[in-house]
Length: 262
Ligand code: ADP
Ligand code: MG
Image 1 (cartoon, rainbow, N blue to C red):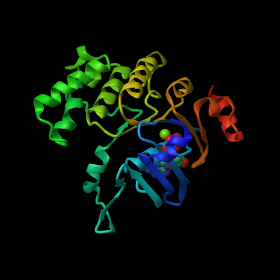
Image 2: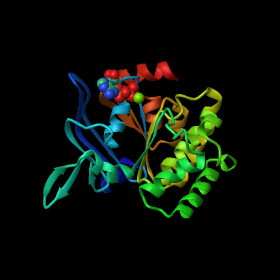
Image 3: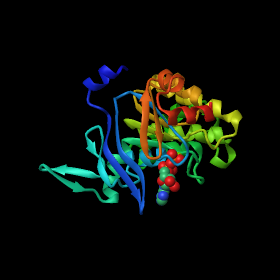
């Protein structure tokens, strides 16, 4: 998608003027980021630059201090009623969070549930999908991530790469409009990274989702991203098409980072 077409459609994710502080420490500075429906954005940058915090703010796992974040029609953290904004309590934020899926570095599967149960659980409990239907959908998703034979295995019986593929299937099962990945392959042994990236590439190609991936896998970013965004010290420093940012970075900070990781 080109920059011109992006400005014509209302963004699916809109981050405007966002500041985030942890105590006395400001970690996000005036972040502005618009992501179009169906766009795939790779967010790169050094450790500690605020990438995870930004994803967590979009998913309302963290409160922001200044600015606003919209996902679709939702103003994250607020309900609009008769022209007024009401701050949501934690338990009220659930319906907003359902539309934004997240896959973490450490998989975070439920250890006492099988792969199939991990995937079917939230659709049954939160979306009230009938049990038989949720299980049938979970089987289809397991097949899609290449794990049909592992339906009844517990996380401890699966490799890291298999666990992460279950975690991706679990996120997709909620049919989110936006899917966030926070360094999904960083905790994996190198030989398991490829199988997870393949599943993600398949999702990008076939699912009609807006996807944001924090990653250090530059080959992946180059192949799948519509846009690469480089972040450093809590600020968006540079962004553009993958080839532009990765091959001819304009900012010295971006050049320094890329020469260290590639
Ligand atoms: P990245 O994901 O780019 O490595 P993070 O978003 O995790 O960066 O962290 C950005 C900054 O915020 C870092 O200085 C980190 O120490 C700080 N930080 C992150 N989470 C917390 C927290 N829960 N409490 C206090 N400081 C935090
Ligand atoms: Mg992080």
